[in-house]
Image (cartoon, rainbow, N blue to C red):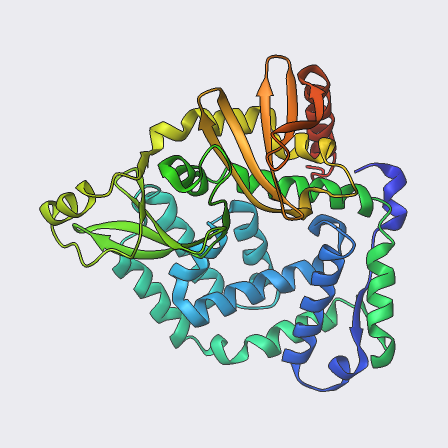
Length: 385
């Protein structure tokens, strides 16, 4: 972290008087979560720049809520067992005086480390769930976390009527907020453009090179069994009136007009899918994914967009292969655009104006912008040691 930035770092957790004085630890923990949300989403503060008592409280709360409502499988899915997140959760639970919960979390981490491909045995995870729900700590969670948080002496209690203004001023005190807002919007769009599921469904035929049937929204994945193996199903809303379904099964993406029936055997699955020509394998989309990761279309778009629009204004967005290479189809403020890399230039065309090029940037200049973007991202990482 740059030394000039240190004086700006928040040192207090701002909470309303009603939460601090209510005697209900749950109210206090909810107030801390709100503080974190405003600081992150309005001021673009990073977790290592915020009071660690707030971050650790949030980590412990996430573990408790996820397991309470869906078991350790749900927690593992939501967190993807990220090592840094697990370490912070373990630190928070231990610091607050929990004993059984940290053991459950450690055992879950060991199970996932021992079975990285197929996941841990379900019965082993259920055994950890049983210990969690049998623990006396289950009913003491809010009290124990609230007492630990109060003991950290980092709370700034303000009048209820002044809370919104105080939170907003604290969030906007970040001198890096404007630059981060743009960079984080680029990151979010880049994530959408490199999502294998979205690229795969586009390659399967959901999007035409003329920009027809752009994806507007893809719902959360649901899981189903096809011939005894796990498959994923998405409901897709596109810019035409039809509603489509996307299926990922056997390393292939399929477009379906309706969700599949129960397919219990390999023969049944083969018979059903053989009549569905709209499909693409994961190997089909690798060139598009490699191109997107190398040439950062989201950053290129941020540099090329005009009229005050930024990456956050992009509605539909897909990466796809065309006869001329890789292209990115986008919908911005109701207009369909195409981002193409041709020769030594990246250009943005308006598909509703005879594909007129509205802006372009040399690839050499784009590469310099990519390097600068990566340098900023690296500078935001917490210092080690």
